Image 1 (cartoon, rainbow, N blue to C red):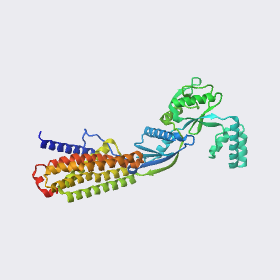
Image 2 (cartoon, rainbow, N blue to C red):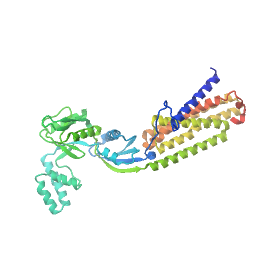
Image 3 (cartoon, helix red, strand yellow):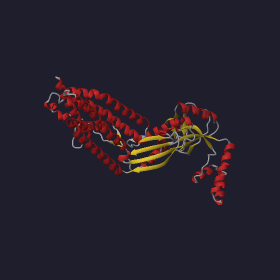
Image 4 (tube, helix red, strand yellow):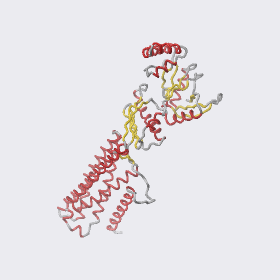
Length: 465
């Protein structure tokens, strides 16, 4: 096969690849079984959905462990969301806040409910008598201030026999207080390895068996050793589930939750704990709902901006570069097809910022062609042949193209590493666009131009200059 035939074959393969890409990108009126069927993944701002802001309580976590705890919290929430099938959750950690974005969820109540069911598991140890009486006295004083004389006398009468009623009343009135009976320990759900339903061999009642990881097992062993003969309370979401008496030191990191469960309740609790016991408590601070109508309007405006930008580039290239501009426009169409196909194939989640990055990359894609064409014109002005000008144009423009695109890719990498989700979307689409533009400029445009070597059109100088 001769040199010319090789050029024509490569150009033919480029067109075939572009055609397949177009059929993959716009499959509406075609049904080819060999092409995968995929939809574009649209972000919250385009598809609509809900944004939830959670506040984590890190008061009991050492400063040097807070970052890892927040990352663990993010993993737990993400795993929980994936279990109930919300597509493409985007979860960010910002200090002590967790931002959860669920695209395509227009009724957020179910999502909020499910996330809320992710339990916070903690173990608390019994306070000594002196500490208990002190805190109980403080709690009584707070209750006395909030209740009427009769309400306080009735509560005090019953509370002397059942002191926990003081705690229940304080919770009901939402009074800030410290639990007089049990104090927090380092052992929480962050150390949980797994949970399953078992049955008490004596009573045959269902219980939930917990297995802690290696670090959790050591903490649990020290905790049981310290509290032999005392109660060790198990709380889930701040609610006391059970408070068994520790009979001996327990090694191996295995604990039981007994709470007069039905089999169904025990199974549900074990399932929720396996889905992810939260390492720290969280509370929903705010929620924002973005309707699909707003997302549709934004998408239409973004696409319109992209089309107008593309047309402006087409007109500019034809007016200033004539035949070279026409070839560059054809390469740019192929570039757009390739980039959209890549977005669809690898599942890039498109946001407004991401589409902005793509539109910007269209302008940058033509930049490499302009550098090449300018060098070609300079060579032609020196009376060099079309083939020589083509060769020199690409070789002399390459250093400027390489350096310009490398620095932009470097900035994109920095944006992706340190930016928020929207900035990452911008950086991702821009990077894909830059890499694809290098291919279309250095391969597609080059072989299109090679097709004119040795033809009559190459002799018509005004077409190229």
